[in-house]
Length: 405
Ligand SMILES: Nc1ncnc2c1ncn2[C@@H]1O[C@H](COP(=O)(O)OP(=O)(O)OP(=O)(O)O)[C@@H](O)[C@H]1O
Image (tube, rainbow, N blue to C red; front, top):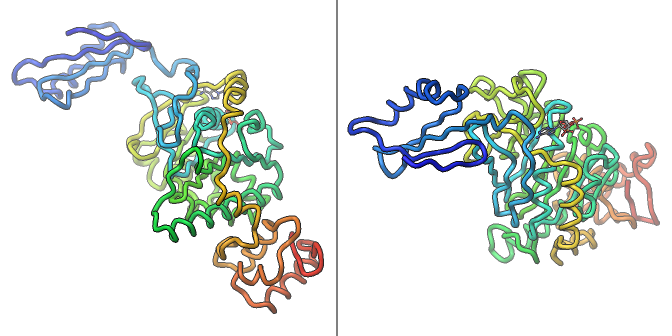
């Protein structure tokens, strides 16, 4: 038996005695720990997948979660690479794929949500095939340090609504092009990058910008195939903020940091997860989390790397001038909103769709004919609703016949 030493301890390949199985060794783990003089839980035994008579014994002598774990820097260079968020208790790295996935990061105040966002942003900043947009309604406090790597940063409900409306326009244009060209999915490259929208405190957005929520839900439903993805963090995973679960159900990567109440576990992760052994209410330090994602279906405690303010500064500075630009098709959809396909103002409720369309309208406003096409309602209905919104101060005529919020 020869041992390989690493940061946290060592591991060795072991040959079992004839007739012995891995379960015999697993049953002896407490005795092995006692004989080696390690802390309880330090020894893990794994079957050699190639040979029933061999196993790997891993001794994690130091508790990897005992203190903050420094961020080693970005490992991803493409959205197709898994993002490395931190380490599990057995010191194995937490790697999670984000391509064509929306992600939700939840946890109480000071649980480390911004910390996890920073790890992901640090990796995305180094990816040459992702355009990053940010929404931070805390006045930009969390995301502004990344501003040099964000192509857009919205810090007010109005800007957020406009940004998400533009993202829906990008999505529609890409979906239209994909169906025309018969290509099923948008494969991100440096010249046709993915668009990832980072939203810090989604509940705040839901409270202050209902029209923006209509767009976010549309992106959650339809964005994956065309590589328009959401990365959202929230402290308040209420039914209202999560659209009664509709938004969460589209988020296939869920990171749950410490929560105050047990019922929040099922709100962030999924119904029944608390009963299934996912216990984020017991996490005892910032940055510790449970992950639910492809390949992560067992409740395992993990801890995120700690990204310092200095790490953010140096990483943002290093990658700022390597950020890609949106492809021409997507940029044209933003610059020329009148030619947007009819799904810009999504949602079954025409009133909501009208509000969203007005909020997302360009500076010069939208014509009644545009609104009719976007919303699918007749001239009389649109005209009456515009008058009502104008009287309530929610809409205005920019120039004759052109409207916006
Ligand atoms: N992975 C980590 N390891 C060690 N300490 C961490 C980690 N992540 C965060 N912390 C510490 O915990 C504190 C809170 O972290 P953070 O700001 O990320 O929490 P938050 O959930 O975003 O808080 P808020 O809800 O107020 O926005 C910070 O002081 C930070 O240094």
